Image 1 (tube, rainbow, N blue to C red):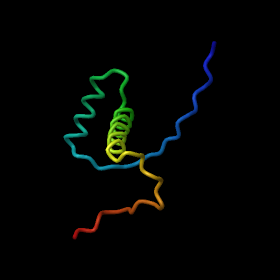
Image 2: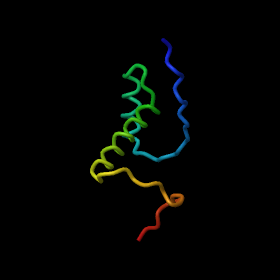
Image 3: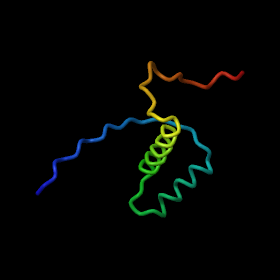
Image 4: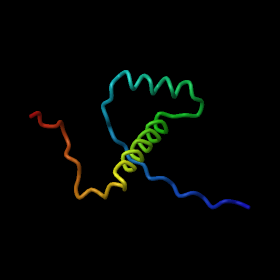
Length: 76
């Protein structure tokens, strides 16, 4: 019995600036975990955190009504 092909995951690239210490920890984890990639580590960590936030909120966030603002935040 063969399984049907899985639906391909659509991916998009984002850029984020993270603390160097965190980046080094991520790279060390990937280096010492056979088969793990930075992309997988980041995707799993973000998904886990979003699940936690949504559980606290009691429901998933609704779709955005517009694009996020780009650029540096205005200092007040």
